[in-house]
Length: 159
Image (cartoon, rainbow, N blue to C red; front, side):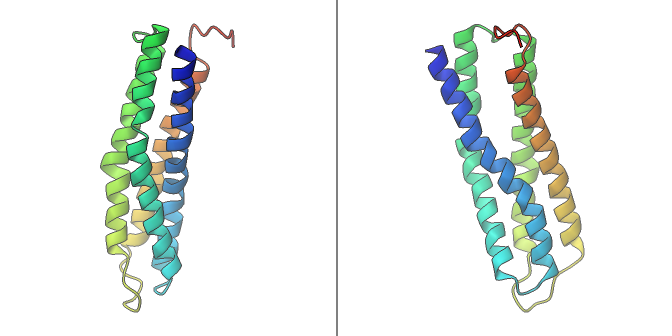
């Protein structure tokens, strides 16, 4: 059962968190493009799709910690410091996504000027930079969790 849970946990992480990291990373660049050209329908449409990917996969991604807890319980490592650190980093990444990245994307989408009304204020580049920074931290947190999951203290692989 442990191997099955671990397999589901890893699959959920790859299939749910991967799309969020890619879509969220693409959003700031596309936002800059949308602000630089007032008639770029494609950029605005792409922004909407990227935001939808982030929102939907954030919900799907909730399976990752659920399966992670089940796997950790099955392995008997719930109290391990490396796991507790991973849980805290995962919670930080989830909070960053829920409190800063997704709302920032929503505000950015609302601020994208309709076609023909000009390129908007100078806040577009600042918003894009802030979203890029938040996304970078989000991605770094997940990379750290991934490393902790692979190279964990007391691992039976000897790595």
